[in-house]
Length: 341
Image (cartoon, rainbow, N blue to C red):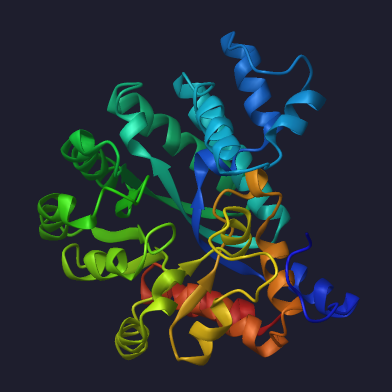
């Protein structure tokens, strides 16, 4: 079944979207690593993949259903074993961002898995090198937000230590919360988030994707999250939508991800329209792009196909500038860059 649309965007509009300088604030490094890069790491590290050729692996990589997505994500993650892998994948990720005209990115790291793999100094050096090379070669700036996997709550304090060390190195911005929503409410992580805020870290949380409005309320009230990842289930609670509109706490929305994972039915308009119309501040992002056969340009094109105007799409992009964690002086430059497009 084709994903819901109301019209075919003009080629001129699509070209303008591709050319527009963009900011993305919800994308996972591991989930954004393309099949070819994972194949190279697997070959280098002697990891057996469920494919005999790159072409077979690329076919396996394509999204089928939620269980298959988890299988691909975990299989890909198992190929990342050395500091060189993390430097390599970071630089390659920024090359892909540059090809989409993304000029600044805030990306998540699956830190509950990382802290078990390699010593923190080695990881930080690798990420730092990847960021340096990515900016030098491709002109894209990026900073990371490591997150705690909800279903691995025993890792939360080690993840905080990891984030604090990376903040000192100038490559981490804050603490996130991801992983399996159902059965692992935000309240389980209230203490570690309180300490993160005390230490001056930014705090964000995935909520309201596979679980309902209570998860979002918990992220806001128990964690004091500054941004909500996904958050589209807010539409099920008018009081929550009103609160989000009044406070302007932003949602990091990922339309293709929501459709692929059946959060939104494929024959229905995406709830981002209802949220925008209600005055909620939302941003557009790609989540795990190669695993959902998308990228940020396709996300914007999908919204255009669902009736968003050029002016509305630019506003969504500017929302990402407004709510990213750069200093205001740098945001001014990004706004000017977008205004010139």
